[in-house]
Structures are given as C-alpha cells and as structure tokens.
Image (tube, rainbow, N blue to C red; front, side, top):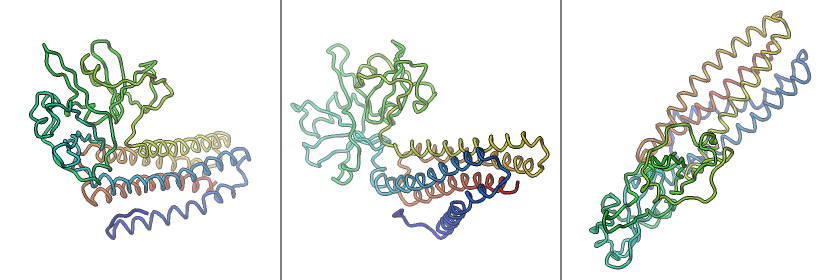
Length: 350
C-alpha cells in the first residue's frame, strides 16, 4: 500500500472506491450469466470481455500504487534538483551533472588537465558553452536516486570555438521528443537518456512516438546526439525510460475503454436483432450512451491532470502530489467502474 499520509476525505473516498470495486467484482458476472434470453455466443463474448476487464482492474491498481510510491519516495527527494547542475561527491575533484526534468543525471565532462577541479572547470569557456548554471552539492542518496544518462557532448573548432549540448536545449531538459534535422530533414526520437533513434519509415511511427511536430534542430546539434545504429520500425515503441509504468497505465486505461465500446457494440447488435421490440434494451442502450459521454468527459479531466502532473517543474515536493495522484487514481477507477456497472445493469434489465 502507499506509504503516504492521507487526509480523512481521501480515506473515505478510498473506502468507497474499494467497496464499489468489490461489489463490481462479486456481482457483474452473475448479472450477465443470469440472462437466459441472451444468445450463448454473445453471452460468452461478454463474459470474456468482463474477465479481461477484471484482470486489467487488478493490474491497474497494482501498477498505480507502485507508480505513486515511486513518485512519493524517489522524486519527492530529487525534484528540487530538476533543471539544475549538481556536484558529487563534494570534493573539488567531484563530477558535475545536469539533472533533467525526468530525473536523469547527465555528466558534463571535463578533460582532466587544466580543468580537473570543479572550481577551475566552471570558469572555462568549455563549461560556459553548455549554458548551465552554478553547481550545487548533493549527497549520495540523491545521487543514487537519479537515473544515469549519457554525458553532454562538446566539440571544438579553432575557428568557431566550442559547440556543446546545452542545459537549456528542450530535448536535453525533458527527453522523449521527436527531433527533425532541418538540414537533412531526418526525423528521430531522443529518449530520456539522450539516445537518438531514427525511423525506417518516418511517416509510419508507433503511436507511442506521438504525432506532434518535431523540434527543429541544426546539423551541428544533430551531430552531437549519440545515435543508435538500429532504427525504429513502425511496430517499435519509442523508448521512454523514466516512465514505463505511466505508459503501461495509459495502455491499460485505453484498453478498458475499448472493452466498454466492444460490449456496447454487442448490445447494439442485440437491439437490432430484437427489431426494437424490447423497450428495455432500447432504454438500456440510451443509458449506456449517456454513461459513455460522461466517461469521455471524465477521461478529458484525467488527461488534463496527467499533463499537469508531468509538466510542472519540481511538482512532487510534498504530500500534495500524493493527494493529487490518489485522487486521479480514484477518478480513473470510478470512471471505469461506472461504465461497466452501467453495462451490467443494462443487460440485467433485459
């Protein structure tokens, strides 16, 4: 269970959610199996969908609790470091790292000669070319909580000087973005660690890569990013190492909505076969359409909350995030429960 302190309203909300979930798990299959007028094949198909849904419910609950636990017990200790340069260990010979908004530490390397000490390195043109801030010292617990990414690269030309990956580059700050080389028009995906993946078919990417416009970068910037030799095909998920649980949660949530639509299709087919004679099916179908509209509206709120959680800089500083996350969890579960409960009620009324 979550190791967070909740207020009384959240505790009551959680209890209501669990009670509703148990009622659904105990009764929904009986409601469907008790309908003798439903064709066997359709009854079996709905039962199969319900069983899949119940499995997703249990999986979703476990993953979400783990997701919130990780946020509360890891990011809450390091969120204040996001977007900053840190030094570890504290000795003047320690290393410097830029911490991304996804909790990844990316070393800012030095040559080890005239800039071997932190105090001298931060005064060099090489360090200044990364456009990073002044470093702050962190402890070992914070250092280990940060995921290790690729070092920030630098190249030097006697005529043009230093060209570096910068701490204010959007694809360095955040990761998991589409990039486009404005010179060659190549399209690539940069992951949270700083790896660049090109595509075998840039116009046919996996949905996880998104459909938004890619960041336009110049040829020098493109050349500094470490490239993976194996390109991504249209069936390859775009890597996003710092939020695998979030991706799985989104996938399961979408599948639950798909199941609801599949059951709706079966019910609509039943209505057609009954040629409109069964008024209860018609009423039930209309009720389901209303529930579906409510579901879609609430899903928009869920998506809005998710964007807020993942866009705020240093958003997880105290138990406020825990409250928001748990509320989001209950909302997602409540939406799913209402949908399936409505379906079960509709079918049982036939």
